[in-house]
Image 1 (spheres, rainbow, N blue to C red):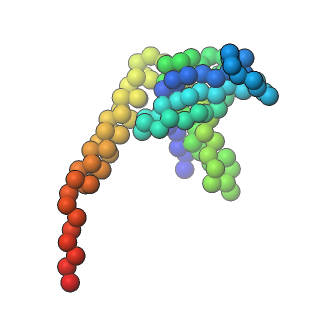
Image 2: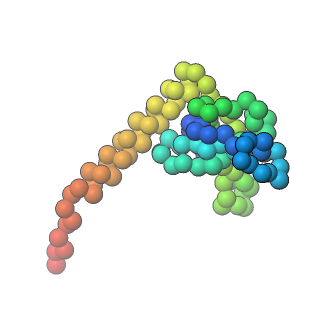
Image 3: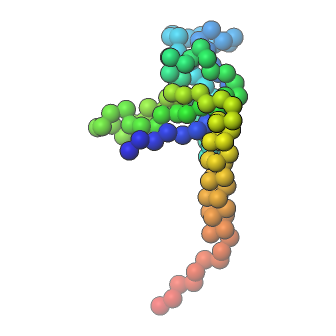
Length: 115
């Protein structure tokens, strides 16, 4: 199953960033995901020079291989402008619906045990 998630970049970490000592030239992005998780994700090398703080991005959550339970967790697309905002808002609405369901369910008193 292919799975991708929308996120919003909060901070870019470059190997040449002030305060960073790096063994490689990869780029990471501190990303707030649609479900409010905060992740540090690898940025695909093809778009590493283009990504900026505040960008909406799509992260590849597909398995590394058919035999692996581990996910790629890599940013593969930057989605700017209205398209990025629209996708983000739709996922936010979905998250709010799920959150409301969970809060509503936990607000109910526990069912008494019946023999």
